[in-house]
Image (cartoon, rainbow, N blue to C red):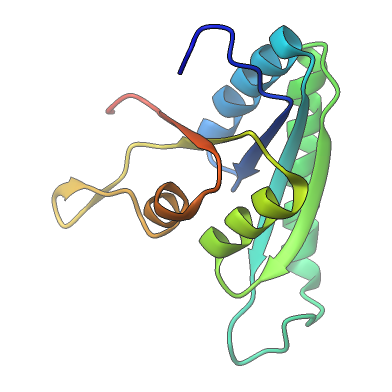
Length: 145
């Protein structure tokens, strides 16, 4: 990344984990530096047995709580963010589609340190986004416990 790279549109996918705070704070700092916009996105993953537009009230309430928390974090950074809640079959493709649709310059993903079967694990979403994103991707992993 060149010094002086401008990110006019930054997408921060959130999931309610502790890493959300650091990712939002960093996105706000980058947004301020470049006078860019920050979009915080929550994706509700809808089971294939349900219609994509199914009413998932408890999931929507959880998502709205997480997005409200994201707005408070941004307020503490003295920065306004936009938030969006979408429903999709898979989280990774939804993030990439949102980035394409909105002309995003940077996807900033925060993630906790996770282990699976004794080894570090990126999960399914991060590798998909890294492979398919139409823009730069910044992965902010929290330290090992």
